[in-house]
Image (tube, rainbow, N blue to C red; front, side, top):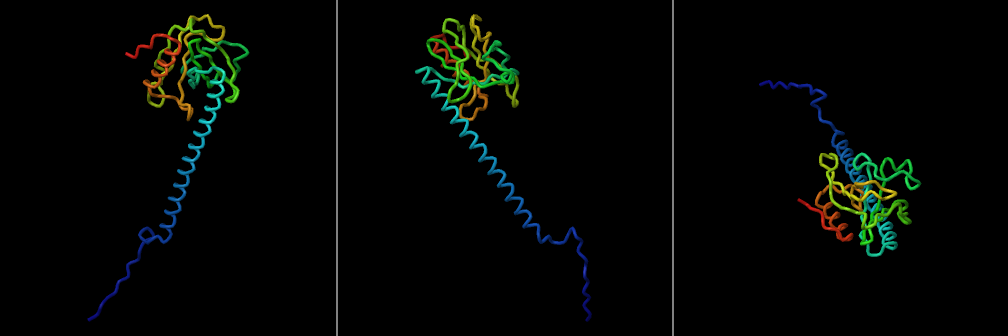
Length: 201
């Protein structure tokens, strides 16, 4: 009996790839490294933002003991330009700037500048403030951005009314997108000013 042996050629596409496993492992390692680097950079950034906020918080609290301190951001595309022209306003601020509020029974102070030595750019006496509430901003990240709105008599040399601000997370400097969180800030400021709490309905 004769046995025929037939050799069938294997195409390059069907041939086993001896280096594929190594390449896949290399790509996986690079991907993991990139993820770790991004996570590490985010963590470091949040730590830096948190420390900067702590410096500013302590500096403002030393100047205004017992006051409620709130970190905010003024974005002209969201909140408009409520700071009147003057030596306290530079051209760079037209793009938006970080503002810190300190609220007490005396009124609201607005701070800017270096975190370790923030400077007072304006004061609203409690008698000038009419209401502190939330407003709906423009759409961002697929959601409506809640704004902190402070309306006053308009007698301020520094600020027009209303003052609209984005409340930010002090630890990460990111915008607070939760309307309830911003409403809580408005309530706490109103309590400091001895105003009636804003209507949340």
